[in-house]
Image (cartoon, rainbow, N blue to C red):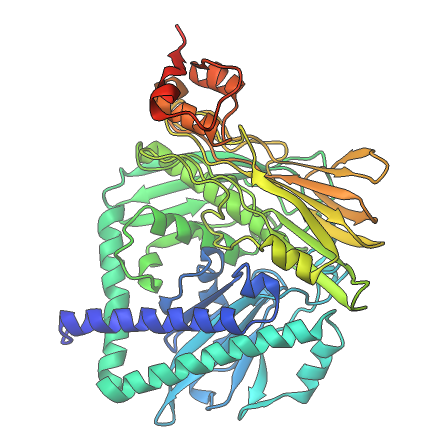
Length: 577
């Protein structure tokens, strides 16, 4: 390597900064709440071979799967054929994407007339057509019910939109203003990155920048391999379960992984995983790849650059026509659920190889509830996505975090004020769900409890839940997190239980209560410090009953006074005999 280490480190952080600027531009320029509030989008810089060089602080679910999508776009439009002002679009799950709402935009970076890099963004669009508002029908029977499938196409040529593509999309999505608002935000962030990268090439020269890209990839591979070599060689297997596929509601779906460690190589074999299912919970191979890549990054070293070199040692076996390698036109819009369970399964396998290093299971569900209908005030179609959070699994030395998107997800809650401003819905309460975190020496993070009230004549809800019939597992004697649950309370007081996945119609003053699962606990709950248990009770995370039954800690009074001084608080504690 002729490039000096200091210059290489400077360029590494400059690439990261440009990627982070992309992410900021995309979120600040977006129109839809799912991007501008929830942040359901990702960005990365690629070399012309389709290798990730740097990525924004975004969603691992997207970032790990973007390279196959970029390579598919380059297969049709090779980098050397691209010109300044070209923009490529794609979302087809069977051409390298994940599901139809995730739209990728590629902007080439040119230096002296030559394509030298690629600026790529992915945004989850609020709606891309299909059978239900939000394009995520939980009972879809094929990919055609899930909205527009866009193969790699040249959306812009010489800076001008293709009239045909633009018109076709306009007439096939429910909210073209939101779609093109977010699309233009993606194009803007790509062009901004292209300008910054071009300036970097001007400053350091073409040869040095390209050499730096290669060196960063090789360095990331070297340091990742050194850490993988420390994992004991062997085969480690684990199985976890999904609730159902949205159609066969009483049928649990297994994901089985065998992780084989040999020196610095990782082979993950998903033989034994469920066959392809009828409902939309299948996941194309890019999804499993993304999940495994996340696990490798989580268990190695955050100081290693986030680029393609980190993953050169990974190999997957994905049986054909299985849940993780379906055949077109199998539906895939709910693929994030399967992807999250892949993380749980691979983590569960590696916990056997790395005791004391792997956390208990996270909540295990990217709760997704899409609300759609007509706003009686504006007369326009509204679409809202609830990216529900849950509890993080307890760590070997710390409690799990409450109400957070975990592992491959990195979205945020949409504020209640935004919901009530943009839709005819009211949030009656939004609070931590007591006793949802798994008991342990370190407690699992809690989920939430949230109630929506319908204020208009009709709202269609695509409810995609998980962990309604299973629980996030604990480790080293820690208990499981509580299961999720959702219930509809009709205007007349009748209650209906939501069976994990369901398309719901809400009428005026009907209410939907969402309760998300917590994370698993870590270690024997009776080893938890009594004062920590009291704090949990005071903060509404653990009930007095659970303190006694799960932690063997008796709170002295039937009711806890939040105004007690520290001395009085301590006097309330008794450790059960």
